[in-house]
Image (cartoon, rainbow, N blue to C red; front, side):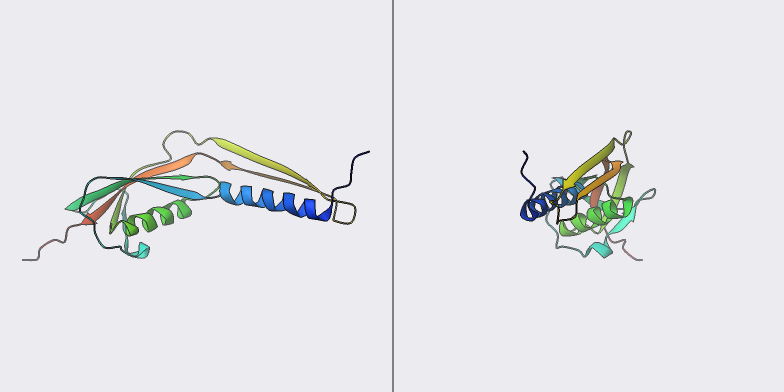
Length: 146
């Protein structure tokens, strides 16, 4: 006869599932430095984003690649600006958005509690598990006034 699931076991399983879901719904930024001299950090909200036009003169600091799962464009852009600012960049040149087709991802889970712990819980989430964008973190060269 199977042993009933204890409340402690149900809580442990729930914590494990929540931890896995939280780590799956994150944004990661990887940087490849391009050999520029180090610059002081810049606040993320001061990092300008260039999608179609770029500034006249700038120094390239690093190529950034953001990968995300179950997160939107705003979260990806926020992560890019934050990482660029830490590198001393005051601008971002977006190279592409969602290269290739996103990979649909489904995550499902079942939690079973003991008789007094609430029964069975079923959950499912879906989204694009392999969205990514690339950008170049830049330091804008001030234009000399005449």
